[in-house]
Length: 220
Image 1 (cartoon, rainbow, N blue to C red):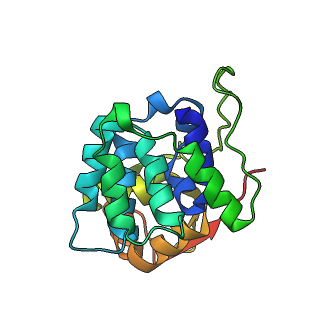
Image 2: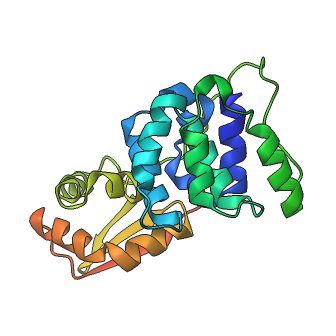
């Protein structure tokens, strides 16, 4: 059931997709602290009431429900009938696990409202699907590894987990550092908020970089 909920979550809420690795969609039990940190950072940014401690709500929910918190956040963000996404998200996360609803019903209703055909995955007793891995270009390049190591010192853990783990490295030419991401959301976020940190990390790694270019890549 949880795997079906997560597949539906990234379908109805595409901005969550870059934060949920393929191995988590295939096996929700494989979601570790780094995934929880990404979801906490997203909840802090995307839920509208800044005075609520939404990252803490994610932590509470993760203890009770594990990776189902991802599905709960997707519902809170996308269900047009919810008047207070923060309150609804908090209500779901703090429920006793034994009393938590089958979220697939929520997703079917949201998809129907959006005009999409509900697709919540194979039957519960079907064998787990093999994860579809999308290669991150340049991950093993020594130049990028050095820059990435400096980034992890500069950028706070939650933000790094949300926006930097799927970056592709395409080289440095003429002082231009060429990167790519899996989504326009991540590319825009990096351009708007993290170019200075990327430049600082490159300098600390000993690379002469004057400009950063970030594009969106598509799986082949």
